[in-house]
Image 1: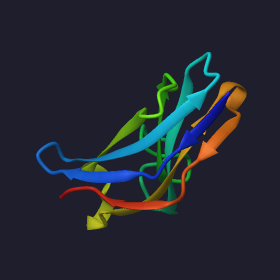
Image 2: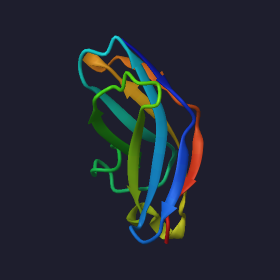
Image 3: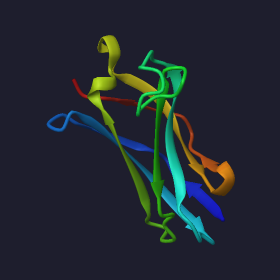
Amino acid sequence: MLAFLGSANSVELKDEHVAKITVPLYCRNATEPIHVAIVGSELKRLPANSVNSDEFGKLRIVQEAACPTDPSGRVEFLVPSQLAAGGDRKFKASVLVIGAKSRPLDQSNEFSFKVPK
């Protein structure tokens, strides 16, 4: 299986108190679901091992997805504003596509986004 990620786009949805991250995703020879993760590149001191962080307190949101075989496919993440510890609303992250047996298939370039107040 091959996976290809495009450039991430983020929008602050202030009424919903989330940042919506959209990343183009296209797969070839997809026969099973994949895992897609948004991974922070900065230590933000989030609660360790929470739903939205890893054991070090860095942003990590993982979701299972069907790998789109249409070139216009996308994957979306909703990052809650509660993660803005101490008023620091800016994050740097990248998106990973993980296949069977935890095999990395692709990684996006690092991008920045903000969660709403």
